[in-house]
Amino acid sequence: MMRLVKYGLMFGNLIEVSSEALVNRYNRALNHLIGKETKLTEFHIDICGYSPEIADEFSDKLYLNPKGCNQQFILLTTEQQTAPLLASKFSTSRSILKDFIEDNEEELFALTAREAVTGELINSVFEVNEPADLLRINQITIEADTVTEHVAFAATLQEDINKFMNEDDAWWDDVLIAEMIELGKKTGDITRHPIQLSPKTYEQGNYFTAHFGGMYVFRDLETPAVIAREAIDGLSAMGDFRKFTFKNRRDIAEFLYRQNLIELIVTEQNEDDIAIIQQKLDFIVISTAASLGDDLGSLTRQQIRRVARKYASDLPEEYEGLMDIIRWASHKGRYPSLDPEHPAYFYAFRAKSHHDRDLINMLLAELTPLDFRQLFICHKEAFYDAYRKWDDPKRDFVSKFLAEEYMIDKVGARETLFGPEPTMDNIVTKKDPYAPRIKVRYKT
Image (cartoon, rainbow, N blue to C red; front, side, top):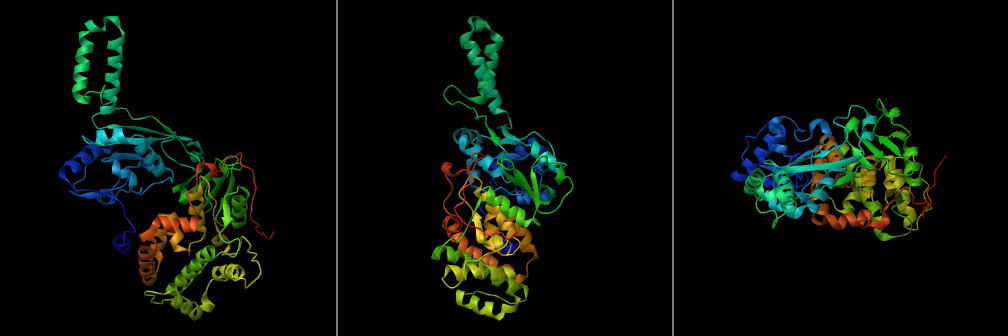
Protein backbone atom coordinates (compact mmCIF):
# COMPACT_ATOMS: atom_id res chain seq x y z
CA MET A 1 0.00 0.00 0.00
CA MET A 2 3.00 2.30 0.39
CA ARG A 3 3.13 2.70 -3.40
CA LEU A 4 -0.30 4.29 -3.26
CA VAL A 5 0.73 6.60 -0.43
CA LYS A 6 3.91 7.54 -2.32
CA TYR A 7 1.97 8.51 -5.44
CA GLY A 8 -0.71 10.37 -3.50
CA LEU A 9 -3.32 7.74 -4.31
CA MET A 10 -4.05 6.93 -0.68
CA PHE A 11 -4.46 9.35 2.21
CA GLY A 12 -4.17 12.19 -0.27
CA ASN A 13 -5.46 15.72 0.48
CA LEU A 14 -5.48 15.12 4.23
CA ILE A 15 -4.89 18.06 6.56
CA GLU A 16 -1.62 18.03 8.49
CA VAL A 17 -1.81 18.65 12.23
CA SER A 18 1.69 19.31 13.58
CA SER A 19 1.67 22.43 15.75
CA GLU A 20 1.52 21.93 19.50
CA ALA A 21 -1.49 24.25 19.77
CA LEU A 22 -3.55 22.31 17.20
CA VAL A 23 -2.57 18.93 18.66
CA ASN A 24 -3.67 20.10 22.11
CA ARG A 25 -6.88 21.50 20.66
CA TYR A 26 -7.55 18.18 18.91
CA ASN A 27 -6.91 16.25 22.11
CA ARG A 28 -9.37 18.38 24.06
CA ALA A 29 -11.99 17.71 21.41
CA LEU A 30 -11.16 14.00 21.26
CA ASN A 31 -11.40 13.66 25.03
CA HIS A 32 -14.72 15.51 24.91
CA LEU A 33 -16.13 13.04 22.36
CA ILE A 34 -14.67 9.66 23.32
CA GLY A 35 -12.69 10.19 26.53
CA LYS A 36 -9.32 9.46 24.89
CA GLU A 37 -6.27 11.46 23.81
CA THR A 38 -3.53 10.75 21.30
CA LYS A 39 0.13 10.65 22.24
CA LEU A 40 1.16 11.55 18.69
CA THR A 41 2.72 14.96 18.16
CA GLU A 42 1.79 15.14 14.49
CA PHE A 43 -0.75 13.40 12.29
CA HIS A 44 -3.20 13.96 9.42
CA ILE A 45 -6.98 14.32 9.48
CA ASP A 46 -9.80 14.02 6.97
CA ILE A 47 -12.95 16.12 6.61
CA CYS A 48 -14.41 14.77 9.88
CA GLY A 49 -11.15 14.97 11.83
CA TYR A 50 -10.45 11.25 11.54
CA SER A 51 -6.75 10.39 11.50
CA PRO A 52 -5.44 7.08 10.08
CA GLU A 53 -2.38 7.40 12.33
CA ILE A 54 -4.53 7.76 15.45
CA ALA A 55 -6.74 4.88 14.26
CA ASP A 56 -3.60 2.70 14.20
CA GLU A 57 -2.58 4.01 17.63
CA PHE A 58 -6.00 3.14 19.08
CA SER A 59 -6.39 -0.05 16.97
CA ASP A 60 -9.83 1.29 16.14
CA LYS A 61 -10.78 2.40 12.63
CA LEU A 62 -14.14 3.59 13.92
CA TYR A 63 -12.96 5.71 16.83
CA LEU A 64 -14.99 8.66 15.46
CA ASN A 65 -17.80 6.52 14.08
CA PRO A 66 -19.24 4.39 16.91
CA LYS A 67 -20.83 1.19 15.60
CA GLY A 68 -20.44 2.61 12.09
CA CYS A 69 -23.71 4.44 12.44
CA ASN A 70 -23.31 7.88 14.03
CA GLN A 71 -20.41 9.77 12.47
CA GLN A 72 -18.74 12.19 14.90
CA PHE A 73 -16.42 14.97 13.76
CA ILE A 74 -13.72 17.35 14.94
CA LEU A 75 -13.18 20.54 12.93
CA LEU A 76 -9.88 22.32 13.46
CA THR A 77 -10.17 24.39 10.30
CA THR A 78 -12.66 25.03 7.52
CA GLU A 79 -9.98 23.79 5.11
CA GLN A 80 -11.08 20.28 6.03
CA GLN A 81 -13.97 20.66 3.57
CA THR A 82 -11.57 19.78 0.72
CA ALA A 83 -10.33 16.59 2.41
CA PRO A 84 -11.71 13.09 1.76
CA LEU A 85 -13.70 11.08 4.28
CA LEU A 86 -11.98 7.88 5.39
CA ALA A 87 -13.46 4.81 7.09
CA SER A 88 -17.04 5.92 6.48
CA LYS A 89 -19.95 3.49 6.37
CA PHE A 90 -22.28 5.66 4.26
CA SER A 91 -21.60 7.26 0.89
CA THR A 92 -23.65 10.35 1.82
CA SER A 93 -21.65 11.33 4.90
CA ARG A 94 -18.93 13.34 3.16
CA SER A 95 -21.34 15.43 1.08
CA ILE A 96 -23.40 16.19 4.19
CA LEU A 97 -20.32 17.30 6.13
CA LYS A 98 -19.05 19.35 3.19
CA ASP A 99 -22.43 21.11 2.83
CA PHE A 100 -22.50 21.82 6.56
CA ILE A 101 -19.05 23.43 6.47
CA GLU A 102 -19.91 25.48 3.39
CA ASP A 103 -23.25 26.62 4.85
CA ASN A 104 -21.56 27.78 8.07
CA GLU A 105 -18.11 28.70 6.79
CA GLU A 106 -17.88 32.19 8.33
CA GLU A 107 -19.14 31.03 11.73
CA LEU A 108 -16.90 27.97 11.75
CA PHE A 109 -13.90 30.06 10.70
CA ALA A 110 -14.47 32.34 13.69
CA LEU A 111 -15.05 29.46 16.11
CA THR A 112 -12.07 27.34 15.01
CA ALA A 113 -9.77 30.34 15.44
CA ARG A 114 -10.19 29.75 19.19
CA GLU A 115 -10.92 26.04 19.63
CA ALA A 116 -12.13 22.93 17.86
CA VAL A 117 -15.74 22.42 16.86
CA THR A 118 -17.13 18.96 17.59
CA GLY A 119 -20.36 17.37 16.53
CA GLU A 120 -22.24 14.39 15.19
CA LEU A 121 -24.34 13.34 12.24
CA ILE A 122 -27.51 12.32 14.07
CA ASN A 123 -29.90 9.81 12.56
CA SER A 124 -32.85 7.88 13.94
CA VAL A 125 -30.94 4.71 14.86
CA PHE A 126 -27.95 4.14 17.14
CA GLU A 127 -26.77 0.94 15.50
CA VAL A 128 -27.50 -1.18 12.47
CA ASN A 129 -28.12 -4.78 13.46
CA GLU A 130 -30.10 -5.99 10.45
CA PRO A 131 -30.68 -4.73 6.89
CA ALA A 132 -34.19 -3.44 7.71
CA ASP A 133 -32.61 -0.93 10.14
CA LEU A 134 -31.18 0.91 7.13
CA LEU A 135 -34.67 1.89 6.02
CA ARG A 136 -35.26 3.64 9.35
CA ILE A 137 -32.54 6.17 8.55
CA ASN A 138 -34.60 8.86 6.81
CA GLN A 139 -32.88 12.11 7.74
CA ILE A 140 -29.53 13.26 9.07
CA THR A 141 -29.30 16.24 11.44
CA ILE A 142 -26.01 17.81 12.45
CA GLU A 143 -25.42 18.92 16.03
CA ALA A 144 -22.23 20.91 16.59
CA ASP A 145 -20.56 23.15 19.16
CA THR A 146 -17.15 23.93 20.57
CA VAL A 147 -15.74 21.91 23.44
CA THR A 148 -16.61 24.79 25.80
CA GLU A 149 -20.12 25.06 24.35
CA HIS A 150 -19.50 28.44 22.76
CA VAL A 151 -22.53 28.18 20.49
CA ALA A 152 -24.84 27.07 23.30
CA PHE A 153 -23.67 29.92 25.54
CA ALA A 154 -24.20 32.39 22.70
CA ALA A 155 -27.75 31.11 22.23
CA THR A 156 -28.43 31.51 25.96
CA LEU A 157 -26.93 35.00 25.94
CA GLN A 158 -29.12 35.97 22.98
CA GLU A 159 -32.19 34.80 24.90
CA ASP A 160 -31.10 36.89 27.90
CA ILE A 161 -30.54 39.94 25.71
CA ASN A 162 -34.01 39.56 24.19
CA LYS A 163 -35.49 39.28 27.67
CA PHE A 164 -33.53 42.28 28.90
CA MET A 165 -34.64 44.42 25.95
CA ASN A 166 -38.30 43.42 25.93
CA GLU A 167 -39.36 42.95 29.55
CA ASP A 168 -40.09 46.10 31.57
CA ASP A 169 -38.62 44.89 34.87
CA ALA A 170 -35.49 43.33 33.36
CA TRP A 171 -33.45 46.45 34.08
CA TRP A 172 -33.77 45.67 37.78
CA ASP A 173 -32.98 41.93 37.47
CA ASP A 174 -29.48 41.71 38.97
CA VAL A 175 -29.31 37.94 38.42
CA LEU A 176 -30.08 38.33 34.71
CA ILE A 177 -27.54 41.10 34.29
CA ALA A 178 -24.85 39.12 36.11
CA GLU A 179 -25.53 36.08 33.91
CA MET A 180 -25.24 38.21 30.76
CA ILE A 181 -21.89 39.59 31.91
CA GLU A 182 -20.49 36.12 32.61
CA LEU A 183 -21.76 34.73 29.31
CA GLY A 184 -20.38 37.73 27.47
CA LYS A 185 -16.91 36.96 28.84
CA LYS A 186 -17.12 33.55 27.16
CA THR A 187 -18.77 34.51 23.88
CA GLY A 188 -17.61 38.05 23.16
CA ASP A 189 -19.89 40.67 21.64
CA ILE A 190 -22.50 38.57 19.84
CA THR A 191 -24.43 41.69 18.79
CA ARG A 192 -21.54 42.57 16.46
CA HIS A 193 -20.29 39.04 15.82
CA PRO A 194 -23.26 36.63 15.97
CA ILE A 195 -22.38 33.01 16.68
CA GLN A 196 -25.00 30.65 15.34
CA LEU A 197 -24.61 27.48 13.31
CA SER A 198 -27.46 27.09 10.86
CA PRO A 199 -29.56 24.07 11.83
CA LYS A 200 -30.20 21.88 8.83
CA THR A 201 -31.61 18.46 8.16
CA TYR A 202 -30.30 16.40 5.26
CA GLU A 203 -32.35 13.75 3.51
CA GLN A 204 -30.90 10.25 3.40
CA GLY A 205 -32.05 9.35 -0.10
CA ASN A 206 -30.20 6.86 -2.30
CA TYR A 207 -26.86 5.72 -0.92
CA PHE A 208 -24.22 3.01 -0.52
CA THR A 209 -23.44 1.51 2.87
CA ALA A 210 -20.54 -0.71 3.84
CA HIS A 211 -22.75 -2.55 6.33
CA PHE A 212 -23.60 -6.20 5.64
CA GLY A 213 -20.79 -6.64 3.15
CA GLY A 214 -21.87 -3.66 1.04
CA MET A 215 -25.32 -2.59 -0.11
CA TYR A 216 -26.83 0.01 -2.45
CA VAL A 217 -30.14 1.38 -1.20
CA PHE A 218 -32.39 3.14 -3.72
CA ARG A 219 -35.36 4.55 -1.84
CA ASP A 220 -36.08 7.74 -3.82
CA LEU A 221 -37.02 6.12 -7.10
CA GLU A 222 -40.35 5.14 -8.58
CA THR A 223 -39.33 1.53 -7.98
CA PRO A 224 -37.28 1.36 -4.74
CA ALA A 225 -34.66 -1.36 -4.61
CA VAL A 226 -31.75 -2.78 -2.65
CA ILE A 227 -28.68 -4.23 -4.35
CA ALA A 228 -26.39 -6.27 -2.10
CA ARG A 229 -22.99 -7.63 -3.04
CA GLU A 230 -24.04 -11.07 -1.82
CA ALA A 231 -27.01 -12.84 -0.28
CA ILE A 232 -27.37 -11.91 3.39
CA ASP A 233 -29.75 -12.78 6.21
CA GLY A 234 -32.54 -10.26 6.59
CA LEU A 235 -32.51 -9.02 3.00
CA SER A 236 -35.98 -10.40 2.35
CA ALA A 237 -37.36 -8.39 5.29
CA MET A 238 -36.67 -5.03 3.66
CA GLY A 239 -40.28 -4.16 2.94
CA ASP A 240 -41.58 -3.60 -0.59
CA PHE A 241 -38.12 -2.93 -2.01
CA ARG A 242 -36.97 -5.02 -4.94
CA LYS A 243 -34.00 -7.05 -3.78
CA PHE A 244 -31.01 -8.10 -5.87
CA THR A 245 -27.51 -9.40 -5.34
CA PHE A 246 -24.59 -8.99 -7.72
CA LYS A 247 -25.44 -12.42 -9.13
CA ASN A 248 -28.75 -11.06 -10.44
CA ARG A 249 -27.10 -9.25 -13.34
CA ARG A 250 -30.15 -9.29 -15.60
CA ASP A 251 -32.39 -7.86 -12.87
CA ILE A 252 -29.86 -5.14 -12.04
CA ALA A 253 -29.50 -4.22 -15.71
CA GLU A 254 -33.24 -3.96 -16.18
CA PHE A 255 -33.67 -1.93 -12.99
CA LEU A 256 -31.00 0.60 -13.91
CA TYR A 257 -32.30 0.94 -17.43
CA ARG A 258 -36.00 1.17 -16.53
CA GLN A 259 -35.24 3.82 -13.91
CA ASN A 260 -33.42 5.85 -16.58
CA LEU A 261 -30.16 5.79 -14.61
CA ILE A 262 -27.64 4.53 -17.18
CA GLU A 263 -26.63 5.11 -20.78
CA LEU A 264 -24.38 3.40 -23.28
CA ILE A 265 -20.92 4.96 -23.52
CA VAL A 266 -20.84 4.44 -27.30
CA THR A 267 -24.04 5.05 -29.23
CA GLU A 268 -22.47 6.10 -32.52
CA GLN A 269 -19.14 6.26 -34.29
CA ASN A 270 -17.57 8.84 -31.95
CA GLU A 271 -13.79 8.86 -31.49
CA ASP A 272 -13.85 10.16 -27.90
CA ASP A 273 -16.31 7.52 -26.74
CA ILE A 274 -14.43 4.80 -28.62
CA ALA A 275 -11.26 5.87 -26.79
CA ILE A 276 -12.96 5.19 -23.43
CA ILE A 277 -13.81 1.63 -24.49
CA GLN A 278 -10.30 1.16 -25.89
CA GLN A 279 -8.80 2.10 -22.54
CA LYS A 280 -11.04 -0.40 -20.80
CA LEU A 281 -9.68 -3.02 -23.20
CA ASP A 282 -6.13 -1.97 -22.31
CA PHE A 283 -6.88 -2.38 -18.61
CA ILE A 284 -8.21 -5.90 -19.25
CA VAL A 285 -5.03 -6.78 -21.16
CA ILE A 286 -2.88 -5.43 -18.33
CA SER A 287 -4.85 -7.35 -15.71
CA THR A 288 -4.53 -10.57 -17.70
CA ALA A 289 -0.81 -10.20 -18.34
CA ALA A 290 -0.06 -9.30 -14.71
CA SER A 291 -2.05 -12.27 -13.42
CA LEU A 292 0.07 -14.52 -15.61
CA GLY A 293 3.30 -13.17 -14.16
CA ASP A 294 4.28 -10.68 -16.86
CA ASP A 295 6.55 -7.88 -15.59
CA LEU A 296 4.71 -5.02 -17.26
CA GLY A 297 6.97 -2.05 -16.60
CA SER A 298 5.95 1.04 -18.59
CA LEU A 299 3.80 0.30 -21.63
CA THR A 300 2.90 2.38 -24.67
CA ARG A 301 -0.33 1.74 -26.58
CA GLN A 302 1.69 -0.15 -29.23
CA GLN A 303 3.30 -2.32 -26.56
CA ILE A 304 -0.10 -3.06 -25.01
CA ARG A 305 -1.25 -4.36 -28.41
CA ARG A 306 1.76 -6.67 -28.49
CA VAL A 307 0.90 -7.91 -25.00
CA ALA A 308 -2.69 -8.52 -26.16
CA ARG A 309 -1.46 -10.65 -29.05
CA LYS A 310 0.89 -12.53 -26.73
CA TYR A 311 -1.92 -13.47 -24.35
CA ALA A 312 -4.74 -13.63 -26.89
CA SER A 313 -5.82 -17.12 -25.84
CA ASP A 314 -5.92 -16.07 -22.17
CA LEU A 315 -7.97 -12.89 -22.50
CA PRO A 316 -11.34 -13.08 -20.68
CA GLU A 317 -14.81 -12.75 -22.21
CA GLU A 318 -14.90 -9.09 -21.21
CA TYR A 319 -12.25 -8.39 -23.82
CA GLU A 320 -14.08 -9.98 -26.74
CA GLY A 321 -17.38 -8.36 -25.77
CA LEU A 322 -15.87 -4.87 -25.74
CA MET A 323 -14.02 -5.61 -28.99
CA ASP A 324 -17.43 -6.14 -30.62
CA ILE A 325 -18.30 -2.58 -29.62
CA ILE A 326 -15.00 -1.26 -31.00
CA ARG A 327 -15.51 -3.09 -34.31
CA TRP A 328 -19.01 -1.66 -34.71
CA ALA A 329 -18.04 1.85 -33.68
CA SER A 330 -15.11 1.79 -36.10
CA HIS A 331 -17.37 0.79 -39.04
CA LYS A 332 -15.91 -2.69 -39.04
CA GLY A 333 -18.67 -4.80 -37.61
CA ARG A 334 -22.35 -5.18 -36.92
CA TYR A 335 -24.19 -3.61 -33.98
CA PRO A 336 -23.24 -5.53 -30.82
CA SER A 337 -25.91 -7.34 -28.86
CA LEU A 338 -24.59 -8.05 -25.37
CA ASP A 339 -26.67 -9.98 -22.90
CA PRO A 340 -26.68 -8.75 -19.25
CA GLU A 341 -25.21 -12.10 -18.26
CA HIS A 342 -22.20 -11.45 -20.50
CA PRO A 343 -19.18 -10.35 -18.39
CA ALA A 344 -18.60 -7.35 -20.69
CA TYR A 345 -22.15 -5.99 -20.42
CA PHE A 346 -21.78 -3.37 -17.67
CA TYR A 347 -18.45 -2.15 -19.08
CA ALA A 348 -20.45 -0.63 -21.94
CA PHE A 349 -22.43 1.70 -19.63
CA ARG A 350 -22.03 4.77 -17.47
CA ALA A 351 -24.48 6.73 -15.35
CA LYS A 352 -26.65 9.34 -16.96
CA SER A 353 -26.35 12.93 -15.77
CA HIS A 354 -28.58 13.03 -12.69
CA HIS A 355 -28.39 13.63 -8.94
CA ASP A 356 -27.22 10.09 -8.19
CA ARG A 357 -24.68 9.87 -11.00
CA ASP A 358 -21.72 9.22 -8.69
CA LEU A 359 -23.62 6.50 -6.83
CA ILE A 360 -24.53 4.69 -10.07
CA ASN A 361 -20.97 4.93 -11.36
CA MET A 362 -19.87 3.53 -8.00
CA LEU A 363 -22.13 0.53 -8.53
CA LEU A 364 -20.97 0.09 -12.13
CA ALA A 365 -17.34 0.19 -10.94
CA GLU A 366 -17.97 -2.80 -8.68
CA LEU A 367 -19.66 -4.64 -11.54
CA THR A 368 -16.66 -3.97 -13.83
CA PRO A 369 -13.65 -4.69 -11.57
CA LEU A 370 -11.11 -5.06 -14.41
CA ASP A 371 -11.48 -1.33 -15.12
CA PHE A 372 -9.16 -0.33 -12.28
CA ARG A 373 -9.33 3.38 -13.14
CA GLN A 374 -13.10 3.62 -12.68
CA LEU A 375 -12.83 1.51 -9.53
CA PHE A 376 -10.27 3.95 -8.11
CA ILE A 377 -12.25 7.05 -9.07
CA CYS A 378 -15.67 5.85 -8.00
CA HIS A 379 -15.10 3.42 -5.14
CA LYS A 380 -11.73 3.79 -3.44
CA GLU A 381 -12.38 1.30 -0.64
CA ALA A 382 -13.24 -1.39 -3.20
CA PHE A 383 -10.12 -0.41 -5.15
CA TYR A 384 -7.91 -0.74 -2.06
CA ASP A 385 -9.43 -4.14 -1.29
CA ALA A 386 -8.73 -5.32 -4.84
CA TYR A 387 -5.21 -3.82 -4.83
CA ARG A 388 -4.22 -5.90 -1.81
CA LYS A 389 -4.95 -9.07 -3.80
CA TRP A 390 -3.07 -8.12 -6.97
CA ASP A 391 0.34 -9.38 -8.04
CA ASP A 392 3.23 -6.97 -7.64
CA PRO A 393 3.62 -6.14 -11.38
CA LYS A 394 0.00 -5.05 -11.59
CA ARG A 395 0.25 -2.98 -8.41
CA ASP A 396 3.29 -1.21 -9.81
CA PHE A 397 1.76 -0.51 -13.21
CA VAL A 398 -1.63 0.61 -11.87
CA SER A 399 -0.16 2.98 -9.28
CA LYS A 400 2.14 4.60 -11.86
CA PHE A 401 -0.65 4.83 -14.43
CA LEU A 402 -3.07 6.51 -12.05
CA ALA A 403 -0.41 8.92 -10.82
CA GLU A 404 0.72 9.89 -14.31
CA GLU A 405 -2.50 9.69 -16.33
CA TYR A 406 -5.29 10.49 -13.87
CA MET A 407 -3.98 12.54 -10.96
CA ILE A 408 -2.50 15.27 -13.16
CA ASP A 409 -5.96 16.18 -14.48
CA LYS A 410 -8.63 14.59 -12.31
CA VAL A 411 -11.40 16.98 -13.33
CA GLY A 412 -10.72 16.58 -17.04
CA ALA A 413 -10.49 12.80 -16.79
CA ARG A 414 -13.78 12.55 -14.89
CA GLU A 415 -15.56 14.78 -17.41
CA THR A 416 -14.22 12.71 -20.30
CA LEU A 417 -15.31 9.45 -18.70
CA PHE A 418 -18.62 10.45 -17.13
CA GLY A 419 -19.64 13.74 -18.74
CA PRO A 420 -20.07 17.17 -17.10
CA GLU A 421 -21.32 17.52 -13.54
CA PRO A 422 -25.12 17.15 -13.33
CA THR A 423 -27.22 20.26 -12.77
CA MET A 424 -30.53 20.62 -10.96
CA ASP A 425 -32.23 20.14 -14.34
CA ASN A 426 -30.75 16.64 -14.56
CA ILE A 427 -32.08 15.25 -11.30
CA VAL A 428 -34.02 12.01 -11.67
CA THR A 429 -37.07 11.95 -9.42
CA LYS A 430 -40.06 9.70 -8.95
CA LYS A 431 -42.03 11.92 -11.32
CA ASP A 432 -39.57 11.67 -14.20
CA PRO A 433 -41.03 9.67 -17.10
CA TYR A 434 -39.28 6.65 -18.50
CA ALA A 435 -38.09 7.93 -21.85
CA PRO A 436 -34.92 6.13 -22.96
CA ARG A 437 -33.11 7.52 -25.98
CA ILE A 438 -30.95 4.47 -26.59
CA LYS A 439 -31.64 0.99 -27.72
CA VAL A 440 -30.38 -1.83 -25.52
CA ARG A 441 -30.92 -5.41 -26.54
CA TYR A 442 -31.85 -7.82 -23.77
CA LYS A 443 -31.91 -11.52 -24.46
CA THR A 444 -34.80 -13.03 -22.51
